[in-house]
Length: 83
Image (cartoon, rainbow, N blue to C red; front, side, top):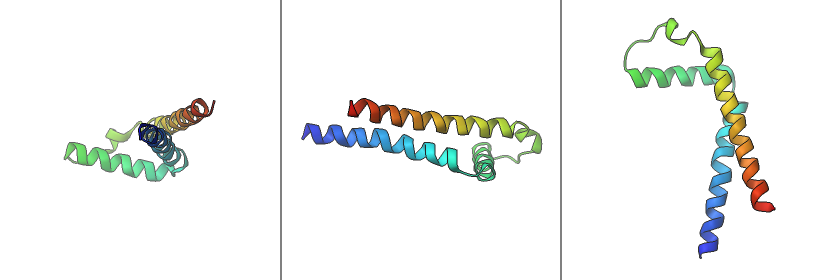
């Protein structure tokens, strides 16, 4: 039973970061921009201005970099488990 829980944990540890990383890397930049702007709007509950998003290309680049790191983490877990 404990071994079954271990493998479920490993599957979650591989699957969740890999799926989120794939989404961040493969998603269109415009779609990520809209989702980020909607997130900021819901978080602040105030009207936002264009000046609030002046560094949007940098934010999208950081989201893509986080996606790559999540994919590398998942690949590392797969490598560690199989060796």
